[in-house]
Amino acid sequence: MTYDNTLKYLVEQYPEDFIRYLLVSEATDIQILKTELNQEPIRADSVTFLQTANQILHLEFQTLPASTPPLPLRMLDYWVRLYRQYNCDIEQVVIFLKPTTSEAVFVDRFIARNTTHRYRVIRIWEQDPEPLLLSPGLLPLATLARTDSPQSLLQQVAVQVSMIEEEATKQSISVCTQLLAGLVFEPELIRQFLRREDMRESAIYQEILQEGLQEGRQRGIEQGIEQGIEQGIEQGIEQGRQSELRLVMRLLTRRLGSINSQLQSRLQDLSLAQLEDLGEVLLDFASEDDLMNWLNRVEA
Image (spheres, one colour):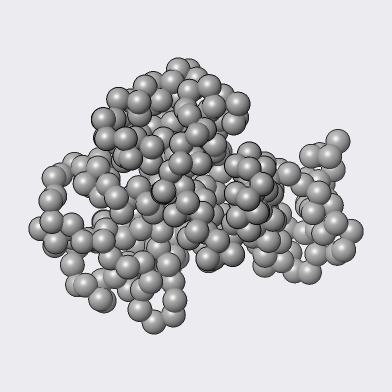
């Protein structure tokens, strides 16, 4: 997904900013570890190694709380593999990006009969934006932080971006800010404060797209680049909707078993926002009737 690639770029380009914010410490000798861990392929969004502190900072960014396997189990799995490989202190932080009332975003541990594993959880929409406004690498996340006036916050972030002196850095941060702001702001409002031209000119935007394309997730945006950036973004959104639909279908199948063709057809017509909402509540479903009732309410 574009969001994953954007955040991966920010963490790898500005690791000091994330370390200062999350660990309240300074580190200058930082090694970025590859995110493919040993044994069966499993990928963490970002793993940062602090050589000076003999510590690993493992960041996991989530737009939705639902995942397969469940996030707590994944975090335990990551920890075991990292500890086996590096045998050092590991700080794990899950950062939820999009506001939700799902109870899953309050879960900060895995518990089984003989095992308990804990990690930190940050719901970015509850965080004070001020610390995020102090560092270039964190400015894009500031658009998602706590505020009583979202438009004013977006404008404030845009002002901070405009004050970055180095032009290439300003351009890259502007692009990342626009991409992450899209989680909570309408495109028209984003364009009021941030230059859309940065998208066309930015090397990081092209890099993010290319990485997504290699994973087969950004075909719509690839076609859109040839036809114009606006059309490309629209197609990219549709690609994201299709990816979300596939995830929801997998989760429903695991939860309810085979889904009849009529319900599958109705699911195909849901918007991205509706699919995201369904992803938050489907774990409470006990039968196809629950799914049908939910669809009836949404379509009413």
